[in-house]
Image (cartoon, rainbow, N blue to C red; front, side):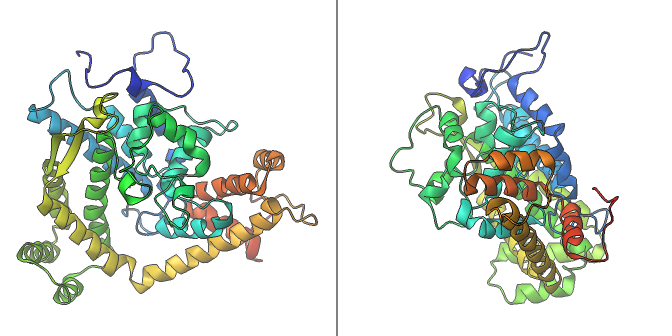
Length: 423
């Protein structure tokens, strides 16, 4: 294949030099993608909540299956854009391996129990710098991906830019509940931007967070596509969404003709038992709704990744928002899931409180060994409470749903656990 002129050394640079392996046949983005796939952080996504608690039923999506679906959609968007050939060519194209890497990585930082877990950890970590899923993903990639010591994978600049949906530091938006980076990640943000400062018009918060590379935009639309369609599918299979509930919900909404037609077709698919076929075929329409258009930003002179933006058909964007609203109001706000959210919040809060007293605030009379020895040793060397809290939070956030449940029961359930129970 001819060399891809879309990228240059700025895109493949890493913060620290990478040793070169003799006979290496992969480019920097393929190496990053492969390292993600073979990491324990990626494997743990198989037991982390997407919509329903993992393990409830075999066919519901987990964070892992969701990430794989997002990666497939992301690669397909790349192929579709390349096929248009108005701005791209066979030697000038958006790298599908780079986009796949961003898609596979995008949920690595999510804690157990989905967005409920993220909100809980943000609340309990408030005195120590907060918790944010995207920031935690960056922390995993750059600091904790490999278990042998504090070591990330030293990702390439383009991969970091493809994953970083948010580019605002927590100190710049101290009251924000999400969509920020940890303050100590500024050096990685600075590296991603090539040392360039944000122009004044890109103010911290929502405006700055909309500044994204073309690969990040593709990843974000692929993510929107996957969960706006697949959360609906899982909700229907689980019985939360049926014709009667959907029609009743629609009767209380202000819907235009397009929205009404979409809901009527969804109801027909439910009646006829062809939900998977309808929603899977819609993925193709979402992919074809994307169009590449020229753009110019303060990084355009350094990389072609900031010379284009992804434009999405407004009709498909509106349909995506409608699907997400249906899933939120009929599934996520249902008493069944809200009860599980309450339980998840309770479990993570209790776990963190025990670990906070033992390791963060360092109760002198509590010398119990509650965490792995290597982490305890690292916490003992930490210079302050905030650093200790971040290390504790890393461990809690890395837990799968089932491991969090088991850890809680070992600590608080008198009838659970034994001296031989180590996992």
